[in-house]
Structure formats: C-alpha cells, structure tokens
Length: 365
Image (cartoon, rainbow, N blue to C red):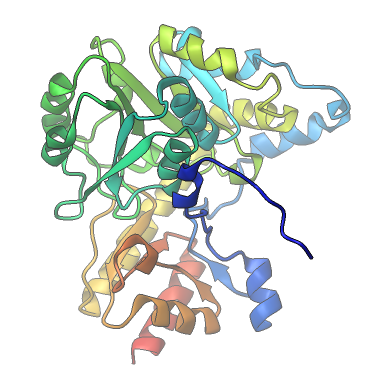
C-alpha cells in the first residue's frame, strides 16, 4: 500500500501517544484470565454512583435528541456544590477537553508552557498540538518543585501546569508553598491546577484551587467525575476559572460536547452524598490496609492524598507488572514515568486489595 504524503506541523513529531492502563478485556484475551482485578487506572472500586446510573437509565429515551449545549441542570448543581458563580464553569468531555481548550485559547507558536515531569501526558500533547513548547521541570523529592518552576519562567511563558494531588506520586501541594508561588507568578501567565483526585485528600494543609480564583491571577482549576464519582466511562469533567477566562473557553467549546447521559449522570452523582462518603471510606481504608502490609514486607511507599499508592519495589517494575498480571492483578508499571523500580496501585475493594497483596507476596517470594 502506498504511503500517503502528509504534512503536519513539526510539533506533532514530538508527541508520544497516551497509553492507558491495560483493560480487563485485553487481559482476558491475551492471558485467558477471566477473574483478574484492575488496580491500574485509579478508577472507583465501587462502580458508578447508583443515583447516577438510575438517572442515566431514566434518560435513555432522549438519546435521539441533542443534549442542551449549556447543560443548565448540571451547571446549576455544580455552581451550588462548589460555591462559585455559574459563569466560572466550563464543562468538558473529560477534563482532558478542558485542557485542550485552555491551550488552544492561551497558547500559540513560540509560547512556552511549564509542566512537572513526570505528569499527565495530555498536558504535553495539548501544548504541542498548539505549536507551543513544553518545558518540563523534574519533581524534587517526589513532589512538584515550585521554586524550580519559578526559575524556568521566561517572557515566553504563558501557562504553568500543576497537579495536586500529583499523579503518579499521590502527594499534594501545601497552601504554605503554593501561596507565595502564586504571588510570584507573572499576571499574564495562566496557572492550571489539576485536582482530579482532590476529593480523596486527607491532608488539611493541601491546596484547594477554588480558594484562589479571586486573587487577581489567572488560575484555572480542573476537576472530574471520573474518580470519586465513578463515572470514568461517561467522560465528564469541568474547569473552574474567572468568568472572563471561562467566557473565552466557552466560545470555542463544541456545542454538544457533554452528552445527555453524562449531564444526567454527573448531576445525579452530585446529589449522591452517601455514595461519595462510602467511596472515600473504602479508598482510605484500602490505602491504610495496603500500606500496613507493604510496611510489614519492608517496602517503601508514599502516603498518598489520592486513591492510589506509589510503591518502590525490589525488582524491575515492568517485570513485576508482568508477573502480577499472570496472577490476575493489573497494576501500573511506572517505568514510562521515569521510575523503573516503582509501581502504582489503585485502592480497590477489600477483596481486590487482598488479591493484590497475596500476589505481590507470591511474586516477591
């Protein structure tokens, strides 16, 4: 077959595609394991919010209609839930889409965007897509190095990405470090604070980006329904930012970017307080249980503010991943993140956690 002659911007040659965690269906096909547990993608171990699932079922007879572009029900509920005006909100097909809108509006060829390394790969991908240059800054002691980020700011810097709690380490930025950092950031730089895991944070000193929307800085906070609310399959997230920023993003937001099931499910999930509390108890108990067992095995791990653990292992992470896979447990090797001797494990149900720990002990002997 003759290759097509294609011409794309040079920046696309720098892009490495995002590789998700191995799905259970793939494990079943490749290994013949039908009872595997997936602890690789930081999903909710309890499934979706029951109230969200019921709302989606009730709305199935509307699927022949386009959704309401402004998603008024969800927007109103989010506004009340977060305590922010509705004109501060931008809805997305996952928070990934809000990232793409931010980079499209505020970045162009020749601009720079600073991001932690390692970080969510979509930051790098979206920055490159808009012809800007990603400027990675390595973590320091497994946390985002705010001092080093300030040192990398140049006249071409237009955006800074921060993730708190961070992925893959699970550590959160503190208010004591974030506030002087924000004060030092130039007024024309957009600071994106990705808080996909904020609901799980137990550290009372952790940053909450919503508290900094009225500080006279360009702060955009990203959040999602994928993790704590159990709606990863619906692809629904949102950004919270000053009204003038939100207005610019909403100008380019696709008119029907959030589906009817996503809008109905997310709105109902906000009302399902019991499910959220059950999720948090399950995750926190799971983190504590796994952590205690790891300590008993002599393995080091970080005390996470997310729903996963960052674990140092005494063998190559890729080899351990493969060995655990053959025991029916899917975790995340962090070799591609620059940590060839670490894995990331999502807190699951008690039974899933026990299966992981049993498999880990077996593999490590």
